[in-house]
Image 1 (cartoon, rainbow, N blue to C red):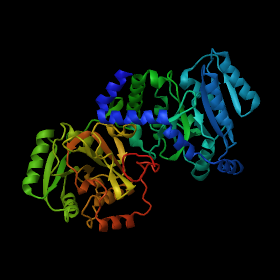
Image 2 (tube, rainbow, N blue to C red):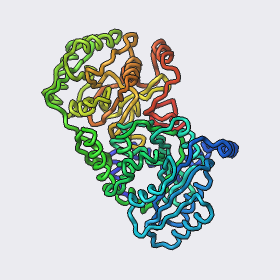
Image 3 (cartoon, helix red, strand yellow):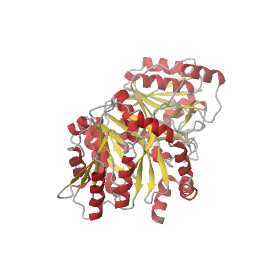
Image 4 (cartoon, rainbow, N blue to C red):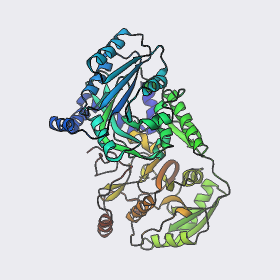
Length: 544
């Protein structure tokens, strides 16, 4: 335990380690999330209303691989299924030749009591993938839900899934989740997820459970694949994403993982990461993007080849030619990238966006790097790290991780729809702290970026709105870029130093005129990358 704590502190820094340890201790000792979870549960009246008003979604098959499950945990799962407010389900439990007779006894008793439990006893244990696929072969529903043999579903889980199915017929949907202790007494670590993001899925399996997939599609891709133990779900979701983007996020905590020390993810985390890397590499290769994927600091780290013959023009902006020249010298010295060209824009805040538009329109380079002249200290592969993602046609812009001289975050993408219209995500955190679900230490999608350090393909360029002076203009620009169908990315593997300033939207103060204009143009603004269930005061993933 002490060794794990030291390793965590090495990666995330001592301050965040203390903060995270305190959060977990408070959850355990004082039950803070237990109380929040209870407040968020549907009332008895709501559940009864769901029972008498079933959505027109048809039969949902819940497939569950079973092997030597502790009877109490298996019974808790079966009870949670029996309590579902949506009655149109079947549960297919494939037992991989359990050697514990009490496991089989729980299964047989459930089948005798309720015909919706369909139990199959295999002659051998086929592993998680094999047992799941054997259950899938027996599924009769139009949609199939995946569940583990020792977890728990909210009473409204299948009703909420059925509601989405009836409304929009997605190919896959997923919900938020949390964890439940083995004795069932405490709930911990809520995972409030972003909306569908193929960018995020490359570096982490953030979908997990509850996942409901159209049965025909699940069979078309062959179900789970053997040889990906510990990351079989990640591999599955990547292959689903190759077939469809009709994927819906349900921002409700409908599924609880059981905290069991014998689980694969607890015992063999490194093996799970390695199979996850292999799943991502094979997925990207099938899409025509060869990549090297390796586990680094408990994350999936990706390296894409970048063509040597492309050109990058850096649009360096500052209030004097000397400042721009110094910034160009710093960038050239730090990166030594032969692709680099530069245009120096001596401009003030009043004319910044017009100057960037003019320079972009006259550029003949393949890529444009927007860079504040006050930025310095770039890491060696700064240009390459940005290019790896900017080259992809679905990516509109890529930003780096910026920090101040104390290595505290000043920019890692913006969250929108918060107080002041938008805010820097995890501003003030130590640059390797990671934050919520360690998101800051992996490449991830964001809703908006700053012009202080952003790379974009010239053919994806959209003009900045020229009636803004602060970072809200960049937020509006980012949203317009997203409206063309592009995604925006922040990579922590490209780093530079830059002090807080108005283009980075630090703190809460905003130009009142610009804020009014922004909010007028963007009513009911929601951020698909920063969950709606978090507080709106700061972009630090604080709970409401």
